Length: 222
Image (cartoon, rainbow, N blue to C red; front, side, top):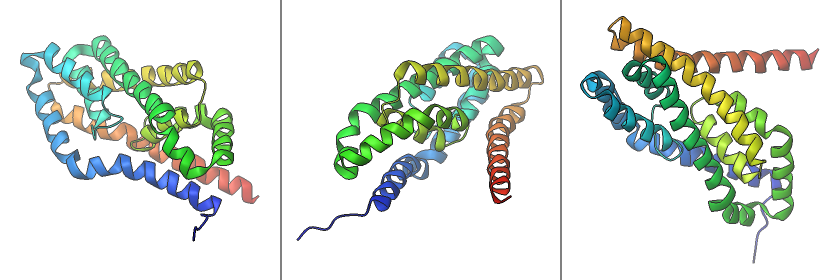
């Protein structure tokens, strides 16, 4: 005897499954990697290029690793200066986005299609084509949602050239902000500024998004 799962539950399972896959590594190894990154940044002045390359590699693996991307990007600015830090952060973040897109489009497609069914997959593709680039843009600086939006862009077969353009522009701006904070912290000789900046910027983004969502709800009620 077989049971069919209602469509709304399939969507819930898909979204929850992707979020859980992203969150679990943070729960298991997040604290250890955070401590490792802090040590690297704090002691990286002796070998800035080597530590900078390591931070870029960690950013590039952010789609599958529980890396504190905001702290790492700020650290790149502290170790490599504004322009070098911005470039390093941009490269690492963009590689991570491309990797996530590839995973979503090719590695996860068979499983998701089996779960969702052909009709729901077509719906996902249509939604991605209509809203995908905006979701990627809005969530780029928000932990967990940033990774999830990239995976969904791949699953929804968003046009790669448009995806790359949106993520590249967003990554460049975000990298510039973090690199500036990091380079300023170096001039002040304060690791505390690096740490605070690395957690404050995404916090501001999340609060702004919440305010926008509340505003839309209020406007909708009227």
